[in-house]
Image 1 (cartoon, rainbow, N blue to C red):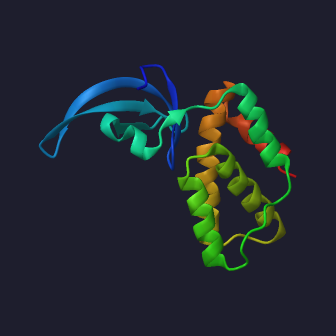
Image 2 (cartoon, rainbow, N blue to C red; image 1 turned 90 degrees about the vertical axis):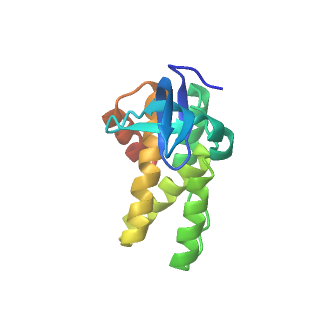
Image 3 (cartoon, rainbow, N blue to C red; image 1 turned 135 degrees about the vertical axis):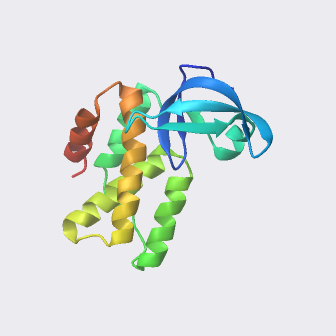
Length: 158
């Protein structure tokens, strides 16, 4: 169980800080929710407490793990399927895993692919989504501003 003030990562959505734990009635059912504020766009997300483990909520990575994420971003492209549809599904599965290293690989691979040849609309959407997830967690883990993290990612991905 997490507490108010904890920094958590929510797969597919990104990382944020728990601002409150509230009981709300939705569709006639009363449940407890974490109210999480995300550093990007100041968006708030309600996460049902009884689904936390199923969803894959975890603590934000440590500073040491930030260095490991940077190493993933700086490494070479992972082999990806040539077929767009298979590549799309593989990237979506990596993002859904909630593993920040997998998300970093998606960001790196698609950024490098975008530099070689323009990404399709679908892959651009995946890149933007993965980048938002990565940014939100790195902002909280490294206690940096969004612009600093964006520059750092751009510099590290070769």
